[in-house]
Image 1 (cartoon, rainbow, N blue to C red):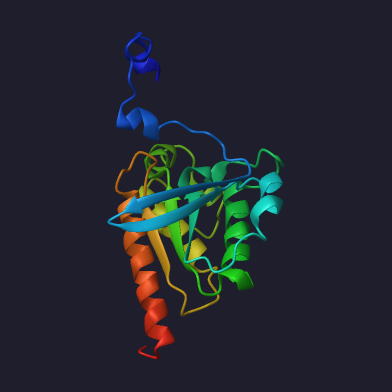
Image 2 (tube, rainbow, N blue to C red):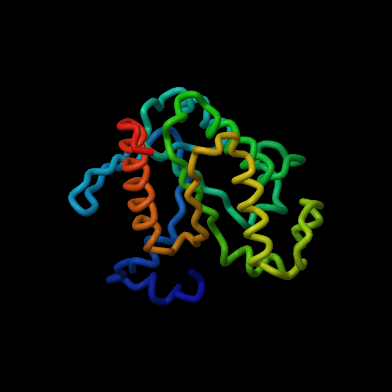
Length: 200
């Protein structure tokens, strides 16, 4: 926002769509957002992902159609706020594994957003993924190889070969994210109905 300080400090300032997309407010507790997309009502529930927030929500969900899980691609070299010797990406992997194996989510599809691809592209030039994940064998400055490696780390945590994980590389300002979610949820409902009627 420093580049836009003159614009945002005017008395008649009205935020743009990009201004709104760039706002970050940490989630605490459970917040529900109902919305209508193509005449279908979605009920999105946002939960706090921090360790202190998980105990508030992890037991609340049953019969969920889809789970959206966000991973910050740029956090491969960062540590947790709660514990300065634990890698954030490792913590995300552990939480992802826990969630996708919960009995409550057996029939839920998983939509995996690998966010902050723009920050990964910048960071990978000076902070090498292999320093934090020695099994990475791609070029040290190749953001495509890095993000594909991170995706594979998460997908490999899925113990159920029949469970589809829909993945999408994104950045927070991507306004097409909801279209991807909509398509994944529609496909999930189709798959559930096909299984229910023994058509697959």
